[in-house]
Picture (cartoon, rainbow, N blue to C red):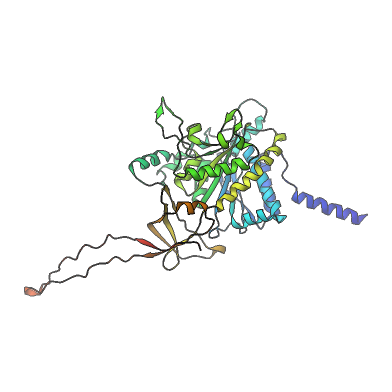
Amino acid sequence: MSDLLSVFLHLLLLFKLIAPVTFRHHRYDDLVRTLYKVQNECPSITRVYSIGRSVEGRHLYVLEFSDHPGIHELLEPEVKYVGNMHGNEALGRELMLQLSEFLCEEFRNRNQRIVRLIQDTRIHILPSMNPDGYEVAAAQGPNKPGYLVGRNNANGVDLNRNFPDLNNYIYYNEKYGGPNHHLPLPDNWKSQVEPETRAVIRWMHSFNFVLSANLHGGAVVANYPYDKSFEHRVRGVRRTANTPTPDDKLFQKLAKVYSYAHGWMYQGWNCGDYFPDGITNGASWYSLSKGMQDFNYLHTNCFEITLELSCDKFPPQEELQREWLGNREALIQFLEQVHQGIKGMVHDENYNNLANAVISVSGINHDVTSGRWPLLRGRKEAKRTVKRIVILVADLAFLYTSNGKVHFHLKRSIPQVSPVRRAPSRRHGVKAKVQPQAARKKGMEMRQLQRGPA
């Protein structure tokens, strides 16, 4: 009898370890416990860290998935999911908890698709960017009146209207010339944004994210940049108009990947709206200033889209399982998109990694700047930064379709300077110099020695 009891207790413990997150809404303390539960169950591939605090002091916790948590590995892309930016839009928060448990469980079950994803990708999940707003909305309950209660943070600010507005700068630069990416922040930006926004911007500065999705509710559509219309204001309101980025084809592809992997988004008819293929350019839907997805694209290397995932901003608990099943495959497929296209290293002649190299693609007026990374397991790499290198990639089709690597090995060009000629000696032993021919313009010029798959 004791043996049977021992077996039963063992099976009960095993079930407890692998049981999925229950389909219910999680208040802040429950959310924190769930994140640490996942870390305890999968300690070799997870890490919980905080990027800052909300107005009311709640931590903005992130759960990281990687085969080497806490370490950036060369050529391993960084991806992020952000949920619950609007506190009353609760589905994204719950989906992020479900996704976290799913990744952990499937990795332990040796699901090769998930194992490969975690081994080759560094995934960062922020379930709630606005925990203060969520607590206000949750206290009201999902079926009570008050459509916008809890949307804003504790200071009453909409966090998706709170990022530095870089759109006006890029629209001006597109017309008159100027930088087309990595636009600098205003000097006083820290005093102009909320604590949650400031924490997320610093997070972006800490990791070279290249792909991201921001999860919202109130509609069912995949929304891509630009969010802010280029059209002039009419009576104080900026008119809606399709306002594509230079990377519009890629953004549409990313949006369609999510939409067609989703259970019903691709059908287009949802929540009383119709969006062909279940996607939309943000500014053609409605114009939005100071949004997070435009900021990602203009200030960093990150391509972010906004996922509107439910007609009901705070769906009842009984709908959560259906929503998870409708979004699960789409969430995984979107993460896998980070391995499309090309990736590579930029080296100098001594094979040191070069940061701040600007990679330009012919036909796309939006560049990418190389980052600076530590090597695996904390070893120091030789680093050298340069003010600006421009590498031109001409084959756009190759860039969009290749799954390989492209490395750039650059060599410093040595300016040719004519020798100094001296005039014959004059009286009193004074020697006169003849001015040399004009030397080439000073600075570093790099030329590409080799380019092609590694």
